[in-house]
Length: 209
Image (tube, rainbow, N blue to C red; front, side):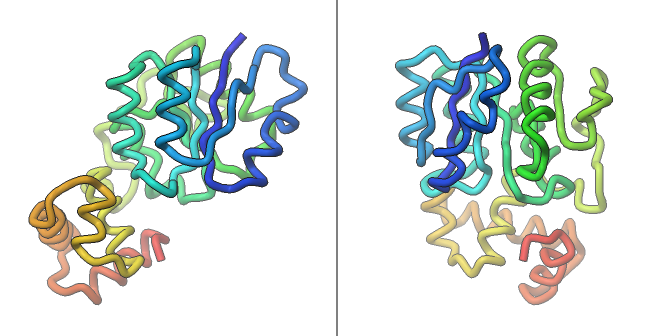
């Protein structure tokens, strides 16, 4: 039996998840929580094997969530189950320590099989590898033209294009405002732009806006 915790800010997703996976008796949805804080508390006091999490959370960034789970229960596998763009986010989050990145458009059978394979064989999995999981995925190899951006830089980029100020981004990511500015300057260099408008246009190419 694989014990799951579902972390998603959307009530419909939380309320329907047990039904979504009801045909798979090797999976047990132990709990469904709304926030990262609730999720970390649940993980701390319950035997959880896999966390199924939305990427866009109310109170935490996905990178910070991964890091905190590593500190509390490093054996827990993290799979992001989200509507966000796989081409942008999957490999940075896998590099950060997640074990999977799957679209909310997939069938329950695909998710169930992904969880089973991840738990049994320690494989990395994304939508591209549903049927052909590769034990030798090179997570250091860029998979798109923006592969030079780190997971944290992509996080900062999304917040910037959402109109967040440096102070808001710093508070959300629990980093210094100067660090936010450092990430911004580094991204501009990597994407070969010199102003926020061009950075916005590049972010649009990334489907972040």
